[in-house]
Length: 156
Image (tube, rainbow, N blue to C red; front, top):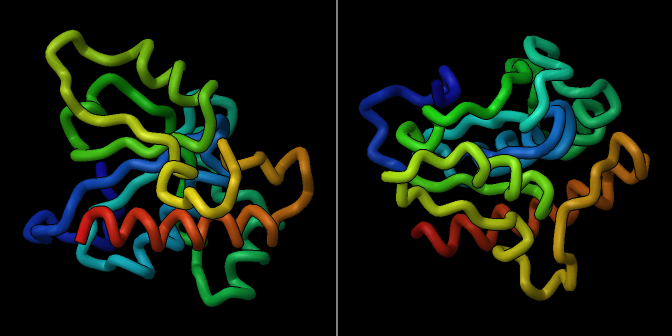
């Protein structure tokens, strides 16, 4: 279900952010985007079930908090087929996540699945790197902020 912070009466777009574990990239993308476009109904999910129920990774929370973005209310969940019906747009962090999401697409679903970096064409990035492995939380947040601004512009 989209984040509790956004009521069902909200007329904004319903956007789901997806990464592998739902503890770094997708919750950061959700947090940054909901700050930029509070009228949107947002959520995030992972293609794996490794971290279901866990809060975002501590180092990502700290890096986001330093930029004024609070991720503390988010909890990891796994992407499901039902998400195609619940969201207007599914935004993935890389091609592996896109493939995993598309593998679950119902045959009658037309919900678009887009790479987040498509909204940051000037970045030169083809995917959002996983800071859990790269340890570059600030660099990833820079890219997420750029892509979130581009997504907001595309939806406005």
